[in-house]
Each structure stands twice: as C-alpha cells, then as structure tokens.
Image (cartoon, rainbow, N blue to C red; front, side, top):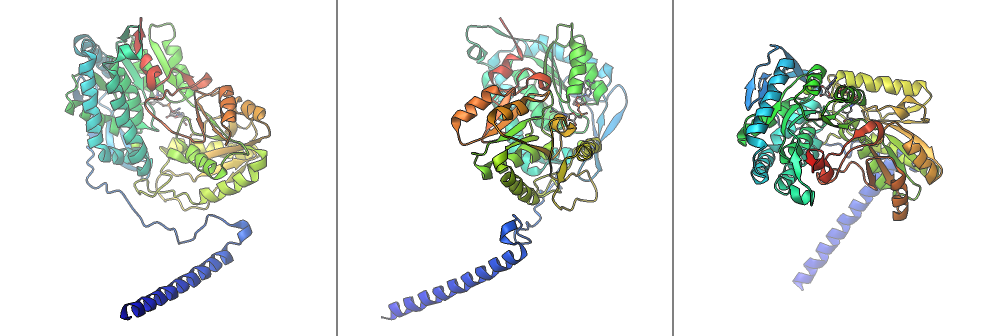
Amino acid sequence: MKNSKKAISKTNGRGKLQLVAKADAAAKTAEHRKVVPLNERRLNFGEKWKYAPAPEDNKYIKIAPRHELFIDGKFVAPSTGKYFESLNPATEEKLTEIALAGEQDVDLAVKAARRAYDKTWGKMTGRERGKYLYRIARIIQEKSRELAILETMDGGKTIKESRDVDLPLVAAHFFYHAGWADKLQYAFPGRNAQSLGVVGQIIPWNFPLLMAAWKIAPALACGNTVVLKPAETTSITAMRLAEIFQEAGLPEGVVNIVTGAGQTGAAIAAHADIDKLAFTGSTEVGKMIAKSVAGTRKKLTLELGGKAANIIFDDAPIDQAIEGIISGIYFNQGHVCCAGSRLLVQEGVFPTVIKKLRDRIQTLRVGNPLDKNTDIGAINSKPQLEKIRELVESGVAEGAELVQPKCELPAKGYWYPPSFLTGVTASHRVAQEEIFGPVLSVMTFRTPEEAVERANNTPYGLSAGVWTDKGSKIFKIVNKLRAGVVWANTYNKFDPTSPFGGYKESGFGREGGLQGLAAYTRLS
Ligand code: NAI
Ligand code: MG
C-alpha cells in the first residue's frame, strides 16, 4: 500500500514535469516561429546551436626556426645560402624559414638518389622494401596528431580535415603500397615489373603530406628512388616526413627532399638523370613541364586542374545531395583539384536545391582552422585569395548573382566565405576556369542528354558527381562523362586502392591502385 502510493505520487510528479517541459518547448517553438516565419524557415537556430570554442592545443608543437634540405639522408644547408618564409595563413605569422634549393642542390639530390638506386634500393628485395614502408606507415600513425596540427598551421586547412581525412589517408597509402612491394608479380601477372630508377616529384600545397604520400609510397614500393619538391607555402610536414624516414632507418639517398619555388621545380624537371617525373599542380605549369620533358627518355604523369560537374537529377535524395554539394565544393576551402565546382541542377528541383543550399551555407563555420568545429579554414596564400576574388568579381561582372552568408571573418589572415554563383552560363569564366576556392558555380539542365553535354563542356576531365535514385541512370550517365573519377550519390571519397587521374587538360596517368603502381614500373 505504502509502495503503491509512492508510485502514484512519483508518476504524478513526472507527469507534471513532462507537461511543463512540453509547455516550455511549445513556447520556444512559438518564439522561434515568430522570428522565422514558416514559409521562409531557415536552418538558423540563433544562439541555440552556438558551439563553444574547441581549439586544438598546439603549444607543445615545436617548429625549428630553420629547415634545411634533406639530401643523402642528412639535413644540409642550401648552396644558394638563401631561405624563404613559411607563414601560417590563418594568422599571417611567420612559422619558420625554409631552405631555397638551387640547381646545384637539385643535382646533389639527384646524384644521391642515383647512388641509392644503384647500390641499395634498386637491388633490395620487395620483401625488404615493404618492411621499410610498413615502418614509415606506423611512425606516421604514431605522430599523426602532431603532423595534423602542423599541416593545419602551415596550410590553413581545418584540423577536422587534417586529423580525420589527410593523416589517416597518408598512413593508408604507405600501408597499401607496403603490401604491394613484394607482390608485384601478382599485381601484373605474367609480366616482369621492373623499377624505373630516379623519380622526380613536384607537389602542390592543397594536400601537402597526402600528395607526398601519393607520390613517394608507390615509387618506393616499386623500387625507385625519389627527389621530391613540396610546394613553397607548405614544406614543413614534408621535412617532418624526412625525419620519419631517418627514424625508420630508410637507407640514405632513397628519398631526397629539396624545397623551393617554381625554379627549383623546373630544375628537377630539366635534370638529365631523372627517369620519371610526376607532377601535381596547375595546368599551366603542367604544360610547361610536358614541353621540357618532350623528346627525352623521361616518363611523365601529370595530375592537373579540374572543373568538375556535380549533377543533381530531380529524382535525387535532395537532403543528401545538399551534403554532397557542400563537401564537394567547401571541403578544404575548395582547394581541391577534383572539387565539384560546377553544380548542374535539373530544372524541376532547382528552387528547392537553391533554397536548401542557401540555408546550409549559413550554418558553415569559417575561422580558426585549429578549432575542432571549424568547417572552412584559411585560404592557403594571399595570391590564391586574390585569384579567388578576381574570378568571383569577373563572374558578377558577367552577370552572375553572388550568394554569400553573413559571417564575420577574422581580422588577420586570408579568408573567403563559402559562396555560390547563380545565373552562370557556360561561357562565363567562372564556369570554365578553376577558382580553387570555396565558390560554386550553379547552372541548370532539362534532360539527361543536356546534363552530359554540359558536364563535358570543359577543357578539364578530372572528376564528376551524379545524384539520382536510379541505378540504371547512374550507369548510363557515368559512361558518358569524360572524367577520370565519378562519384555516385557521394563526393570526395578517396582510397589508396582506387586509381585517380584525369582526361584532357586534367592530365594523364593514374595514381593509386594497380594503375598507379604501373606508372612506377617498366613492364616487360
Ligand atoms: P603551381 O602549379 O604553380 O604549383 C604546384 C607546384 O609546382 C609547386 O610545388 C610549385 O613550386 C611547382 N612549380 C611552379 N612552377 C614550376 C615550374 N615552372 N616547373 C616545375 N615546378 C613548378 O600552382 P600555384 O601557382 O600554387 O597555384 C595556381 C593555380 O593552380 C591554383 O589557383 C589552382 O587553380 C591550380 N592548382 C591546382 C592544383 C591541383 O591539384 N590540381 C594544385 C595547386 C594549384
Ligand atoms: Mg605556410
């Protein structure tokens, strides 16, 4: 009896509480509706969803005031005696000085790579090479937090991306290629896969460590030695990688890292004792490199720019597609060669897509890249910011409408808010040229045939996206797209097993998977 009384009063109590809570919620909803009328409801939750600052601690990260060249297993001063600064683009603070390698240094690096190829690496069994690659992969995993923070500080990308996307993929690339090192005869059955010799590799600033891994891991797995040049704004993590090679006991000269800008890159491309050249960067520089290599014995792979179409059919799951559009163009501040930078929307769903996109970009957080909640970090450099601004201005001058959320940008550093342009036509510069920033050009289409025609109407052909709930439509469209990588109902997904590369002015050759391995071997 006593017990049941207690139970009743308890229930009553809870009931009352629930009622109060319901009344509260109703009041709050009413209040919310008062601010934002139902017919123009936005994903705007006012202060309710405001995130507390969550900065990644970088106080323990030590950056040497100077970084030398890594040649023949040692850190050496450049023959030029010159150094250049590397900045944190989010604060404009100088982080360190980086050695400027001249022709003489490049020559020393190539000679060291040749010696290592002839004496150690080229002769080693695949099984032994694989052990080194596994060791490197494991050290990268151990140091991944530190490397992620450095990547964010030097390049401006968000810690969320460098920690959760870049670093896991860097380790995965070394693991994947470690596995192939002693199995090349299975990768190319019935054929004899031989190494090429000394490989020159030039990489860009948008995924500094990941591009280094994409280049170095397959080259080493196949028995080649390397001279690598990181991009001038993002060399710090490449030099940490050099320390990791030392720690892993990689024989001296197997990987040499020379830092500098375009001239240093050109010296690598022009060196007579390079057997293969691999370049990732702008189409403009890619063309120059192709010219300098023409008529020589050098093998060449080029991974250049892109202007990918992200195609939304009217039967697509729209909310998922919106997330795909967001990650397609705003991931890594849009500094992505395969970014879904041209949005093609079927006319029937155009108003819905634009409304939802407008709402969604309002919720993206721009600012301190070291904050774990930041969605869009700093633009990599001042020249890149100027390029984005100039192209967007040209778009507006040519008649497009610019949509940008209201957001406060930090006073220092290089920033650009997530933006999109509507009313873009195929002839506009913003529909043809790579903006390489968080700016989307939106166009419409009526029929699948028109979507394909518009998607292919570009000098590039690196990637594309297709959103529809019909599998048959996916296969039909994908086969007609002149793009090296096509994502269906997703975007910007990467994996070391999956080959990546382009058509037309996006370059040639593939990286990743078996095709990527083939690019570092001579098959007989
Ligand atoms: P870039 O092509 O000049 O730089 C990429 C790499 O090439 C860097 O390491 C650079 O030092 C090196 N390089 C420059 N000139 C060279 C030469 N003559 N010979 C050999 N190596 C050379 O790209 P940049 O100037 O940093 O960016 C300009 C535009 O290029 C961007 O706005 C973007 O549109 C595009 N880009 C595309 C990338 C991609 O992954 N597809 C990556 C970087 C830039
Ligand atoms: Mg920097």
